[in-house]
Length: 247
Image 1: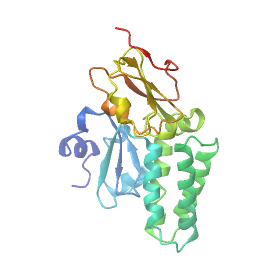
Image 2 (image 1 turned 120 degrees about the vertical axis):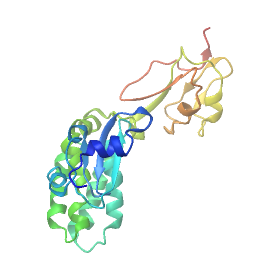
Image 3 (image 1 turned 45 degrees about the horizontal axis):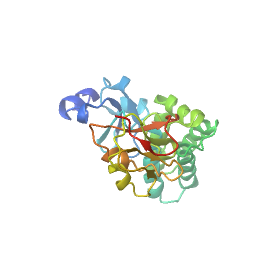
């Protein structure tokens, strides 16, 4: 029924966050909906409340995101969908959504500039007020709400070239922790670009110049070792070349 709380839908009806994850945001109403933070979980689901929060009722659908979701990447993803769906009749929607997408893509690639958020907000408000149909008028919602509620995450991307959620490939690195590596060669054999060097009973080393941040090494590393780590904005001290495993 209208007026039911977001918390009740997500945790009681939906069963909560998968695998014991931490709630981060919920997008309501489809690709043009806004992303609402944990502080709004007790908000009622109705037209007026969602509109005031920067979102929409839309189709009634919801997408729930955990702490492993990057809101900048999410805004980029949904804007790419809306931009592709634009009929192109009016300039604000046709050009504005493309410009916003370009800026967001640059931020996720570590090419963000200090004035990007201001530019995004200005473009978003222009698209919102100047578009002829509902698609264009609501398309900036993911951008405006993620900036409104998760501004700090944008600042991390732009100012520190860091993705807190460890999602944006251009901003993350994979390392093999020397004192955890057993030299089993599983990650070495699995790397699709041969970026890992080493041998049996030798501490493996990832060549950061070759690594494409696909995450295969992290996936295949045996849990009993957990030698591969994923970081953003920091470096791990590792040997320059493979060396014997210390037992």
